[in-house]
Amino acid sequence: MSKPKVLELFYDVVSPYSWLGFEILLRYKNIWNVDIHLRPAYLGAVMNATGNSPPAMVPKRGAYMTKDVKRLTEFYQVPLRQPSDFFEVVIKKGSLSAMRFLTVVQMSHPEFLEEVSRQLWLRIWSEDKDITAPESIVQAAKKAGMPEDLTKNLLSKITSPEIKNKLKETTDKALEYGVFGMPSIVAHIDGKPELFFGSDRFELLAHLLVMVCCIPRIEFFL
View (spheres, rainbow, N blue to C red):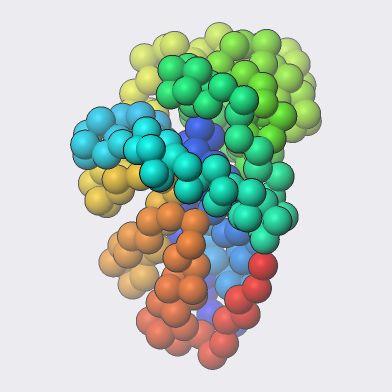
């Protein structure tokens, strides 16, 4: 069996397409024999640094996104539902505190990172709930199986210089790879990073793994 290849997934829970990329990539992990490194980063900083704009802030793209989310929910079986007040929840409140929390989870208790990330996505993109207030983060972590005392201890650290710097470091690393939005997957093949943007590039990623890694056959399914 070939040696697992490393895929880095840069994501932010404010992004519904990041949720899709996250779930789909994890479905392929064992089938493709890849190591997935989850990289919680701050999408707001990426957008500012690259001059990008949220899709919903462009009227035509926003209207398309509303329809797209419904289709993607059915196709990928990920329970996406747009927040009732999109501007307030996604644009105004954002995800900085949530991403700092995921950063401290990644640094100190990485075994919870996958499920806490998923529960935060569920809150904002399925249950129409807040992800910025401490009590909301506590509830997400509880559903992920994290003890409440541990959650509160980690929450107390999210404004520390160490956590702020780590999130910035991860975000800056994403920018170094050429990331301009999320989700972004960086495939490390023979020491060379290959960037794939979005949740609809898995065929291309599979093709790269087949052609470059000399894997005889890769199954691709939902």
